[in-house]
Image (cartoon, rainbow, N blue to C red):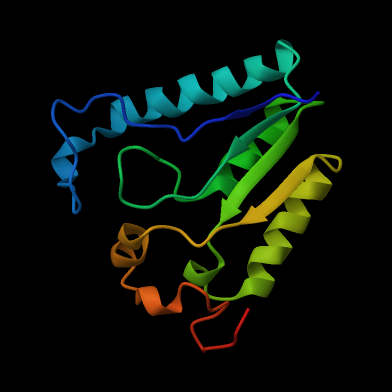
Length: 149
């Protein structure tokens, strides 16, 4: 049996329910750095405790997931870990300008990690499309030019 951990990197400082669009005043960059540091250290500990993979994903404009770029988190993890697989589950292809560029990033991460990347792709939720001004009707389209995935 394999055991995978999943981390959204949520914002722990909400005093009330969050509703889109959330005001910028909910976020503090100093606390944000601390949150990222704590979660990256926790992800390192998954390896130390024998987990098989740490999984991360892409979310935009919501405090339950402070990870608009799971590829940046994966890059940090390639340098902080040696054995654990890194699951990017997933990127939102419809929100990336070109799927080839996204594939190149995943390939680069896989090389940097020594072949430890697990890559998945997701459709996302409506708020993510609103946050980047992309029509939700493009959620199943691989590029903004209309090429089907």
